[in-house]
Structure formats: C-alpha cells, structure tokens
Amino acid sequence: MVDRRRILQATAAVGAATVISQRAGWAWAVERGRAGTLDPATIPKYTTPLAVPSVMPPAHRGEGGVARYLIGIRQFRQQILPSDLPETTVWGYGDVSRPGTFRTPSDTIEAHVDRPVRVTWVNDLVDSYGDFRPHLLPVDPTLHWANPPGGDAGRDSRPTFTSTPGPYRGPVPLITHLHGGHTHEESDGYPEAWYLPKARNIPAGYATVGTFYDEFGAEFEQRNGVAWKPGTATFQYTNDQRASTLWYHDHTLGVTRVNVYAGLAGFYLLRGGKSDLPPGVLPGPAPQLGDKPGTRYYEIPVVVQDRSFNADGSLFYPASRAFADDAGPYIPEGPFPPIWNPEFFADTIMVNGNTWPDLEVEPRRYRLRLLNGCNGRVLIMKVATDPLAPRPAPVALPIWQIGNDGGFLPKPAKLQELRMGPAERADVIVDFTGLREGTELYLINEGPDEPYNGTFNPSDPATTGQVMRFTVGRLTGKDRSTPPEDLDLPFIKPIGPADNTRRLSLDEELGHEQSIELLLGTVDEHGHAMPMHWDHPITEDPKLNATEIWELHNFSVDAHPIHLHLVQFEILGRGVDGKTPPEPGERGTKDTVIALPGEITRVKAKFDLAGQYVWHCHLLEHEDNEMMRPYRVG
Image (cartoon, rainbow, N blue to C red; front, side, top):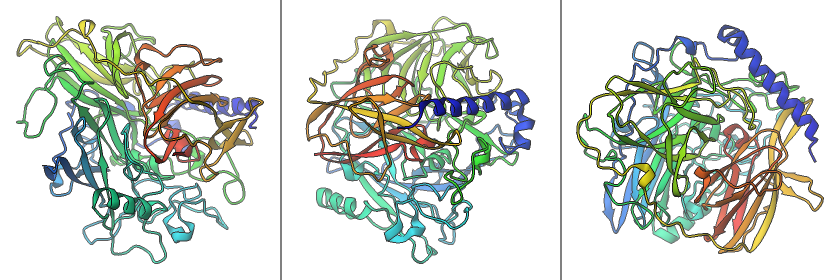
C-alpha cells in the first residue's frame, strides 16, 4: 500500500511551489519555464462578446429515424484572445463539408430522447498535402499510451527507452467519447479504439488503429450494417435516457489531456421525453439551425476552461516535468516521466472559446447549461458585483440549480455558490429581473489555483478568479418563463436496491516524495488499498442488469472527480463513513462525482448494457497516467 504520509509531503511540496509562484509573479514563472510568455494580467477583460455555440448541422436529417452527422477534427486558427492580440492555432470539430463550422468549443449536437443519432468521426489532422499534422502540444511517449510507433504488437502499451526521449511528433491518434451517454461499447469511445488520420506519410511499421478498433468496428457493422472506413469511426447514440446536458471530447489512451486542451470538446444536448419540461416553462430560445444573425438567446451552453498563452497567441502547455517540481531522474534512469505533469493549472480563463467575455443580458431569467471543461481545475463560482472583492466575495444574485449531469434535480436548489469539478455539468437559472440597464455583474471563481482538497486558498482575483461579465441591457419582451422557485421538475425513477457492493481505491505512487503515477484499485479485507494499472486484469465485472454500490475510498490527499462510463448513478453519501448526504445539486443522477480525500464516496448504478467500458478520474493529467481502469458488464 502507498504510504499516506509521503503523499501528504508530496502534496504539501506541490502546494508550496504553487504559492511561491503566485507570490513571485508572472515574470518569475516565465523565467523558470512555468508559464506562457503572455502575461494574463495584460489581457484586456470583457472586450469580447460571449460566443454562443452554434448547432452542428447534420449530413442527413433523420433517414430511417436516425439523424446522421459527418464530423471531422481539424486544425485551424481562432481569435480566442481579444482582437488586438494574435489568433491561436487550435483543434476542433466541425461538419466536414462546411469549413466555417470548425471551432472550439465545437458546435452543439441537438438530440431528442429515443431518437438515435449516428456520427462518423473523421480524424482529419492532415495538411493541404495530405501529410499528417503533429501535435500542437508536447506528448510524453513514456506513459502507458496509444503508442502508434509500437506497431500492432506494441500499441496501447508503455514503451521502453534506452535514453530519455523528447516529445512524440508522429501522427495523432483520436477517439471521441460522448460523456454521459448510455451507449453500446463499440460507440462509447473506448481509449484503445483510436485511429490515425488517413495520411499519405504514416511511417512504416506504425499501428494505424488501437487494439479494440477492429473488434468494435466489426461489432458496429453487425449491429448497424455500416463498416468503418480508414481514418474514421462511426458511432450510434441511442439517446434512451433522461433529457440532460452531455458533452463530447477526445478520449485517447494517454493523450486525452493534450487532445482536449488543444480544443476537442463540444456540447451534446438531449431534449424531450417524460424527463423534460414543456416549451416555455424554462427560459428560451436556445440556438437552433437556421437562426438569423442577432437572434437573442435566453438558454445558452457555457463551458469554462483554463488556458495559458504565449505572446504569439499560441497555446502554452508544459513541455517538461520541471514545470511542476524537481522530480527525477527521468525514465529510463529513474521512474519519472520526463514531460508529464501531475496537474496543470493554466493562468487565463476561457469561456466558450474566448478569454473573459461579456454577455449582454436583459433584465429577465436566463438558463445557462454550465460545463467545467478544465483539465484539472475545480471551479467554485458565484455572481458578484465586484470581481476584485476580497474572497469570499459577497453574493449579488443566487444561482438556481435545476439540473446536473443526469438531467433535472428532484427540486430546484438555491445556491450562493456553485462547485463544479472537471467534467461536471450544472443546469442553472440566473434571474436578472428588475436590474437597471447598465448594471454590471461578474461570474467569479473562488476555487483554488492548485489541487482541490476541500480546504484551499482562492484563485487569483485578478486573473483566474474572474470568469465572465454580465452587462444588463434593456428588456425587449415579456419573460413568460416560470420563476425557478416555482418549478415542478420531472419525476426521477429511483434506481432500486443494490445486488452487490464493491470497495475501490483512489491512490498515488510516489518516488522521492514526488508523484510518479495516480492509480485506481480495490480495497482488501484489512482496509488497505490494492493499486492497479490500466493493463492489470479486470476486477470490476458487474453482471448484466445488476445494480451495484461502488464505495470510492480516497487514500490520496487530493479530490478526484470520478467518472463512470455507460451509467448515471445516485450519490448515496460521502465522508469518513460514507453517510454524509450529497449536496442539493448532486441529487438525482450523475455520471461524475467529486471524491474528497480521506473519505468514502458511495454511488449506486444499474449496469444494463453488456460490454467493456472504463471508469477514471477526470483530472485529465491523472487519467492519462494510470488513473483509469477498464470494467466489464456481463
């Protein structure tokens, strides 16, 4: 078992380094390679209107009852920083026949309950000559990762080296996951079902697909009658679940952190059915296909992400483990990956693809579909009048949460602040009714600029402590939506009694008091963690249609947002005994839960589709270095 005292020492060291860098300032951090060369304090705030994600156009509308999409992943330039600063090269999804649809975050896929959606995902990371594009960001080839250079025999493995390697510069593997989707295994975006682009210069001997690609492709063809083509994978989403806020993002083994940071994320909104509310009850409209320019929206998807930049507009992401600490020696002389960082907290907040935007609102109610899209940052957001107010800042307006990952809550929750771990969603209403024209309010963040553990110092109020601004304009029409306190939300069917309970561990391996890797595993009869790696035999194997309680024992000193693929679960409790009730915004069903250090977090789910899936920490740097395990249903 990992020694908990050593974890405490390591976490304290990382925390101290974070505090030192904040106090010493941006110039100190740049000098030591710990920041991008663009000082976040010099980036003008609230000069860019909030971008509202458009709706992804389908390639075919509902043939045979199935909406079909042809969505590519491409490289392009986008004005993320204010217009007087350079553009940024990023990746994003878009309709392959409409180059103008490529953006990060990408267009929203609008879906309806019980109406299937079929998407062909195209790895289009090639240049105009048909040659592959290397990664925008540094890829550590010493992790257990997709590893195309290993060929069919060495793919999806941890390669060996005779000297410390530099970053991988070959063709980029991709696989897209619908986060929160109730999906058959071949359409889930399994981390070892990746594929390279259909480029003309793939090096000889490289594996072009992951271990599970051919198996899942054959399974998809048998189930749906469609064969996968090189450089693509076709998935079908049955949408047989509650109306909810889902999102899609890359999920490739060992490179998810850099693929998502480069821009690969977008919303997937599932509407209709008995678990939704009739039109007009909630604020609307939301964006739709064919909307005219200037259309006013009162339901808006909002993804909050942190990024760092260089003076030329390019994304900054650490190219060395030295960014985080003095761990060493590096592989192969020692156990430490030379490029991977245990966590990364960028210094600039980006909302819907722009830094610190402004949203002009009317004095009425707005529905915001919020997503924490950060790699590792826990957000604690509130609405305030002064973005620089001493923390904790006074609350100007409450946030009414009406839904989370799995759909609507049992009843609305009036919150003074909203805590969201990476990948968590919150469906909220903010009521600006009665505010004077010209009033300015701010969505601020009081979550930490370091790993979250429940007690922390708030983020820098001048930079990462600010998210976006709301500027009140004039009312253009009557608000006929229902006040949030009067909402009667749809019935949630309970999951039912459990057939089995599993005790699972969240842990960390250290060397010289520094992090080597993060691990999931089981808990033995003595209460000790039994850490396991990605390629160890499967230990979580629910029977088909079994309902199970998973007890997550966090032996580390940091919180971990744990995500289970396939299912939506009920949070039963947390705390040292696992019996402290969930927060009001965590009730109903969820697919991601924050597991606090030193506590047991208990969730219950029904596993109703046979197949192979994964569960993992959604701190992407953790996920990419062993904090993910496969599980098998049936």
